[in-house]
Image (cartoon, rainbow, N blue to C red; front, side, top):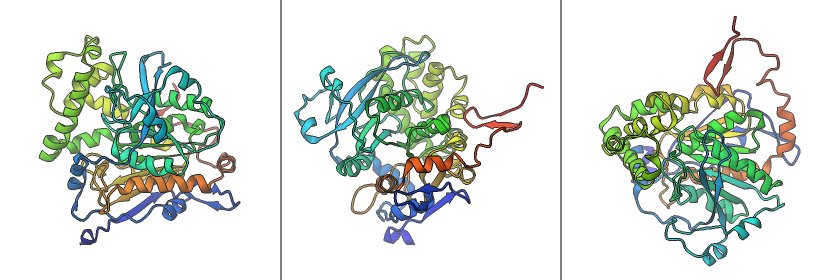
Length: 428
């Protein structure tokens, strides 16, 4: 009956010997200690007393904190996936209000002129957050702005890497985003390092964006330039989440249908480009109602997957978690009806000393609404990132981590490659 008082239970799962982190004061700490000292108790709205109510309340029209952006369109440098993608940079209210409103963009977003973009670079050392939104979302999402607002108010810089075709951005090739698409965030982060060479970079992802961010961090491994990352409501194992979603009436007719409808709306907006792919059949796509149907008839022919199951297995981030080599926090609600509890990789978190899992027994999918307003996970994310930036000497911690035993040199077969989800053996 603790829900009557809004008290959710918070639990932490981690390696028995987390990586040591050097502090700016010269002492040592760990990821679990940082989280416990910065993440507030989870106190939620008792009127939204289960995961379904918390999740459904995300559809309530909430203006959220006002964040102003300026958009820059990047041209992809990927040889296989060319095209363009939009990155929205947080600017001051004064700068955003002075810009000419664009009726074809979300509210409070304008586009950098060539001259303005030429002056964007800086040698300052402000912390900077890179954010990745959820399925069919964008920089305008309230859950994302609730994280950015307190950080940018305290001096952080921030940008949002929008999925291709999202946030009213245009696509120039017949490909939308997908759940494995790490190439755009990789290019954006590389270019941020050039524009802002002294800024420590952090990242946060939500739902599908959390899955992409986890895969990115795993693929980068020790080369990852991010100082820390947070994944909120990550579905982790997409195949299991799909099975669970299709197991109940609510899962199929409410959640899968809603997400399918949103994706079809995105497809309709970009249909002229999408139908340049001869493998996408317009008459079949127009009959799609559910998430898995869209993935079967649009994402599979777009990316070359034979089935949606193959797509989910390839895109899921549960194994990539094992390859992460930066401080990494995952936040999930165990009653999330979309990112199902059965897909949360508890054992993988126990195996990787760089990672920490924070779970609550209540909160839904990107919900965790508090009685006084706002979402708990957004507060927790901002508090954790603030604490780790203000406390940790990243350079000293990196030197220390180079001495750990996570990646033993001269490994012998068999070797498990977490990024390709294969056990590697010699030819003979």
